[in-house]
Length: 480
Image (cartoon, rainbow, N blue to C red; front, side, top):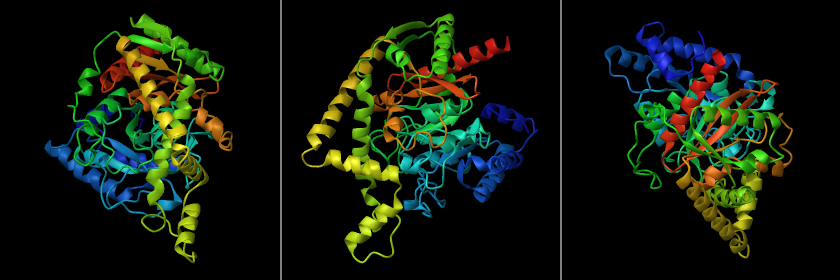
């Protein structure tokens, strides 16, 4: 069976009776076994997925199947699925079985997607390389000695190595876009509030957003149609109507594109990424888009403000995991104070503890105004400047990451290097705007390269339309 890049391809073959869902699922199970050393899956849902395949195949036969029938999808291991384990790749939650399903999982099930398993990630989604997972690092299929990106590394590698058609991740500061870039996939982070966070284990609540990793723009569009929309269980979700993204994705529209010149002029940017982006900019010009290089003078404040705010929220959100209310419990403690200390010290990994400590510090008396309040003001300035830029332009263009995927173990011992790798992705997270990572082929070492596009709040159709036209045009040029 060949690699399928879109739901549309699969649906055509199902309609022609050239494949059925049981055969399709067996193919993906075989792929998971073949690439198990990449460590993308924390658990494969063999039984429930087979039951789904049988039921949905019957629905296809009688014409009652949902919009996602034929899609085999994995979910990041911080998204709740009733009756299945969810651990956020942490010892703290190892063995926990969710008593309910998240809104995003329920919407997948309602439209007849098959959920094949839960995917490895950085512990509590804190990391940019998928090396902080309690279950071990995820390896990049392009080069198993290199990282998959994070925190949704398992989601990206599962799609990259054809272990499922698509995957859900979460994006707090780039955790869908950066792994998608490292694995040559399409990673979409919608507008903050476009998709419900109910049933998603929280890291930083004012940043966290469910996103998708796919091999085609069309699949990203149809998944967004299904996942987006109001939810009574989440008061932060927008009640705006959900457009037909699939229909709006088509059409040859011309856009005004702002290239953040400081991002391309940075000495930290790998030359192969810069070269690929400059070629892409020329291709966009040939397609008729207007390109301007613009300055964004707040670039140096992005990472500091992001980490002050997200660690503060992490300190608050993860306080519930104390061995009493939730999570791993030490069994040798002699008193309550020791129980709290030992349970949290043993249950959390180093990176999670580092961020909790930093967040507790910036929220503490005497430092709250100096750090947390100041970071909130900077976030507001960043949002205002971004919105001003998007009043003039339709799209902002930048790299996704400063380098291609680096080697496992290369940067993990230096938190500052790891944090600075988020410099291009946290802008969209701080501003709450949608962003997409699209592949630009490989460098000379056959490592994936990528490009990031950002646009106005709730204008995901602009990203989908431009990405589809750009990738189609690039494919046509390559064929010629």
